[in-house]
Length: 150
Image 1 (spheres, helix red, strand yellow):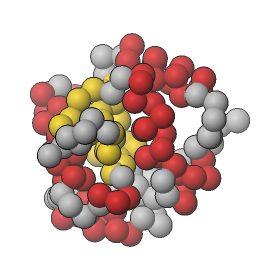
Image 2: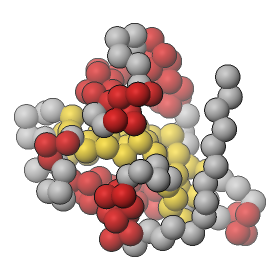
Image 3: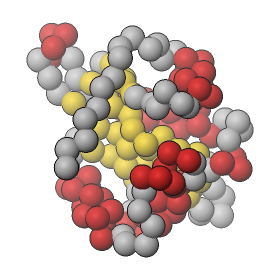
Image 4: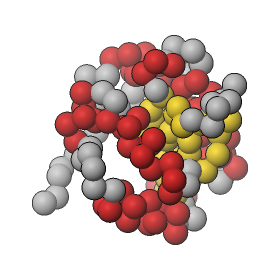
């Protein structure tokens, strides 16, 4: 059984391990220096429009995570959007329903925050993730662009 809760700073090493546990994450997540991650965590915790969620197993180990952002806007008659980012489940536990439970938790939290639409992005190379999100009712309606600022 997986229980979901807000992340604590003590969860950072486990969250980072989940983020690094694939080829994309391994290339972009720094190992060792937790200072930038602690600073980011502090900003997340300080904002009422941000939530960092973890899923823990019966032994208390962090086995899943995602970040939720509440995005108010004027478009679509002021509909509030819920952005779901950094969705990860421990590799050894995938395809056991944990990801679906994590996404249900994310939806419940974002609905409670007044969101009228959920959105997320996933890398083009993550074809299994695409199928997963489509099975949950998400549709690929837009093309996303990113630009790194240095």
